[in-house]
Length: 193
Image (tube, rainbow, N blue to C red):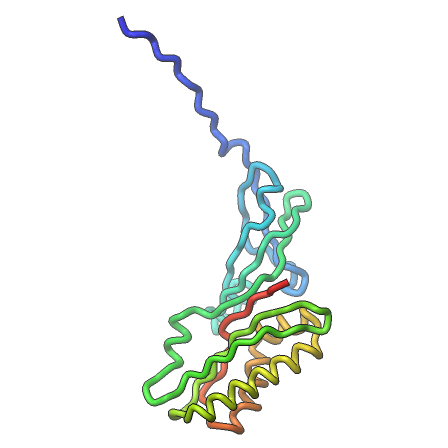
């Protein structure tokens, strides 16, 4: 006769978990962006959350902007986050670029007034094909403007300008003097410290 196997009791870890509400930072109006389960609040710290600008503001025209947050502390059943960066969707970027235009990418690390470093990636699309010397000069103008603007602003002010599109508009008005532009977007940002 075969030995009776001792059945191991499987522990249901799902029942041990509790739900935590995820909130945006104060500069994003402290809005609730979701809920997440965790067995221990310490497991939440460092967890990333991605949300579209439309979900935060209700503005459907900002659907293509994805904001990234990271949970940095937990108070009770509320998980507070910090802004870590943003990006635009690839389909939106591809829709801007057409045949016979030039895509000018400028990437720079800027330092804010309160010594925070942010990497910004700017995309400028011209109306017609631009010469490489014009593209090079435009990159230089864009990087100088980004560094100058960031040095005058605090971290929260800079992020607000980037996400709302006001900084991209400012770049557009300064860079269009070099060559006619169709569109300028800050397609990516990343907080470095």
